[in-house]
Length: 184
Image (cartoon, rainbow, N blue to C red; front, side, top):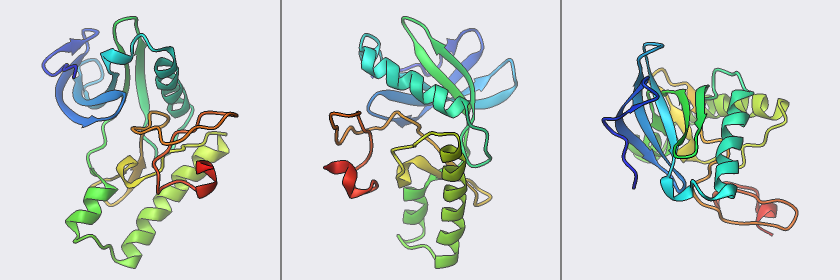
């Protein structure tokens, strides 16, 4: 795996630590020296730099998020689509994914707590759909719960597992978190 910890990207982003690993990318926590803030940087793995399909998906993700502006959707600050390095600089979400959040609470959430979390997810999805975008990978891994209890939706278009395809268009989703008709 490519490791950028301790490196500076574009003379601006000081990469601090790995915070997530997906099928085609690694997400790092970094410090943006120009804007004086902590950010998350999703870097396309080197092994996919020569794969046009993966590069297209990665670019589509940045475009999809960049079009959106909503309190429950991660924001994009910057992108780099160089020949040797491609990355998306995003808002750093100080929280934990919904899967770990539920696990820390014994695997069960109170109905009123779950309702509040789902309300934020639905607000985010409403904003996404109004802009003509389909997330296609809603799962507990892609929903971050912040310390104030609000939710932020992540991972637009860079699904970790490709679980099905059809002839009309390639679909990306996690089995068990998508409607069954997408698996036919």
